[in-house]
Length: 78
Image 1 (cartoon, helix red, strand yellow):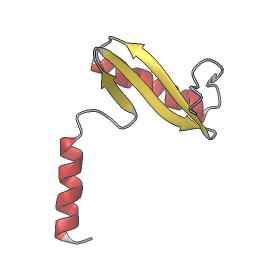
Image 2 (cartoon, helix red, strand yellow):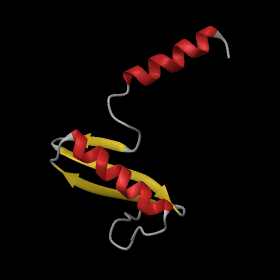
Image 3 (cartoon, helix red, strand yellow):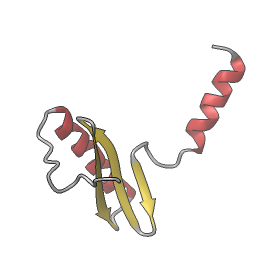
Image 4 (cartoon, helix red, strand yellow):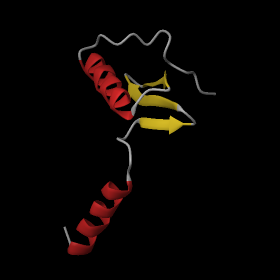
């Protein structure tokens, strides 16, 4: 990897305020990722970024352990 590529990668990481798959819209936090080919989206509501990160981690662990219930959290996109 060249020096310029490393610098670009480092700048991209520095610009990101929130972890991937965690978004803030207005006052609410959203978790979004794919599980078994389906998109998982959950509105966490107005919580702190720490609580949002913890919830994201819990959901990803549940998905990895196949304990995630997608029945109410999957948003069918047209």
